[in-house]
Image (cartoon, rainbow, N blue to C red; front, side, top):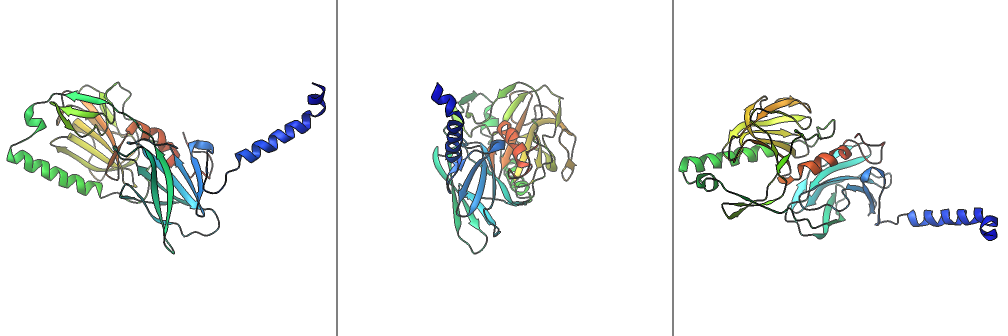
Length: 319
C-alpha cells in the first residue's frame, strides 16, 4: 500500500504510456476510430470502411485518401467482378460497395485501381456468415410460371426497361439526409429469405415487406430522382428512385402513383399508396435497396446511410 501511494504517479504514467503504445496502429493494420469506421493504412493510402465485418446482403461504406500530399486517387473500385463508382469528396473519395447474397464467408478483397501511374491496392475485408432463413409461399401457377406468349413478351420488355433504368445513375450521391424507412409497420417478410414458391426454390427475397392495407401513403425514403413509375408484371405499380452512385430504392405493389419519372423528390414526400398490384398474396408494401445491380438489406442500409454524408476524417456525421 505504501509503495502504491509513494509511486502512484509513476505507476499511472507508466500505465498511460503503455496504453498509448498498444493503441498505435502500424501500416496495414486496422484500428477502430469514432463514427463506426474501421481505419486501415495500405500502400500509402488511408481507408475507412463500415461495417467492420459485413455479411452477405449488406452494403459497405468505403472512404479513401492518400496518406501524404500526393493525390493520384483511384480510378475504380472492384468487388465480386463489379465496378463501383467513386465520388470525389473533400480530401479524398468514397463509394458504396454491395456484398452480394451468396458471397463466401471469410477473407475477401476489394481492389482499388490507382489512377496514375496505375496498379492496384488490395483492401482485405472479412465477410461473416449469416442465415436469412427460408420462406414458403403458395401462388397461382400462372403467376409462378407464366406460359402465355403475351405475358412472356411483357416480362421480357419489363426486364429491358429495368436494365435501362439501372444504367441511368450518376457518380454523385444525392443524399442530403440519412435514409428513413418509408413505413413504421410490422414486417411480413424480412430481407434475404430463400423462397420456395409452390415447393420450387426461387431467388432470395430482395427487400422487406411491410404490412399495409390498400391506400397507405408511401413516402420516399431519401432525396433523389424518380427514374421509373410504371406497372410491371411481377412488381405491379413500381416506383424506383435513383440516389446516385448506382444506389436505388424500390417501392412495389402500389395501388396508385403520386410521382412521375424525371421528378426530383425529397425524403418524406409521398410518392404513391400501398396496394396489391403485381404478383402478391395480399396488400403490402415491398421496399428494396439495389446497389450496382445487387439487392442489399434496406434496413441495414438505412442505418449505414448517415455515415455517407461526410468523410470520416472531418467532423462527426449527421444522425
